[in-house]
Length: 476
Image 1 (cartoon, rainbow, N blue to C red):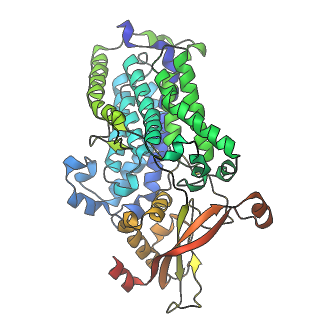
Image 2: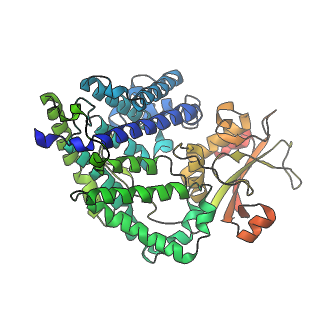
Image 3: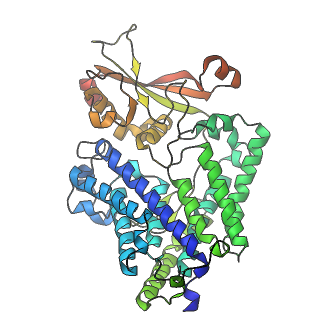
């Protein structure tokens, strides 16, 4: 069984496992802090209503047995506690079977959340975390050396993330092929970060070089992950550096950080330190059998993502099974040329008119106040702020949750207001709420120095006319 383990990758395994533990922790904390307002019993898209309409076979989840907000909180906080234990190294202090059980429980708990999360959990990094978490079940602990098969499956996962993203770009928007997409991307991406303004103002030649480098990193480098060392380690380092560049330029939840963690699985860590004695112990037969079975399962399920990669109709961020085990990935097949933002306002006037004073609601991450520098939130995921970006693109896509959101503002619902940065009506709810669509643009250097504004905006149209509670029922 010497072929089965790769002792030289023991340090890489430690980094991967601790890194996954941190990202699981962030994911569970995000769920715990936001679920009541988004999908709780009285949330914007309540889980109980979803469970009545969707059978278990279409969305496997523990919550099909029973749902309550208290139970959801127990699952989220329990997952966070278990994740923290993984980060602390508990899986290396328990027997191999117990370590595998811990990882399996984490995967099951988060799968149960994702499969009832509806629109709020329809992001590629949810499936990516679940797929990575499933592989982590079989990655072992200090009782045995890192299994070669699982390390290769992690390379296969990184390959699909990067190569899928590269292909969807080349097959999609023409600006990727003429190297001009980054003229717009830093300004129009879902949630800019504190450095996005500066990235946007790089010379256009730098933007073209940045785009070309991205194509190389996503279409050429991933292939090298399957080559012998040290080439595979070099390729992994390029992936890591590329993802760090994306971390600096925007807020993509844990997508970039998780890709970095997974890329570490391709790094030969023998240069850093010798493997511990336990890494050379032959694996138990039952463990080897489970690893081989998991590898065979992933190989079979890889047919659909592989076919998708080769298809001219390639789809982004699609799960081909309800367990999110082997998925397709990709991002930004098309690039927006304009940033359209929905600005939500309220008033306490008895009846709105030409002289009515409207006050804006402030969001934590998405642009609202032009003078506010975008903040860094990733890997934490501000789900409402992200969905507000989609609302600006398509009101039809957002209507199912946006109308209930406005209803919560008209009630001064405390759970919903905790998702916002500021509430202009702290003492009593507004009588009317409206939404307006604005075109946001980064200011130039001169305007920034003169006014301190990072954005300038112009009104495009009315998004939602002034509504009170009665009027909202008609819109719904």
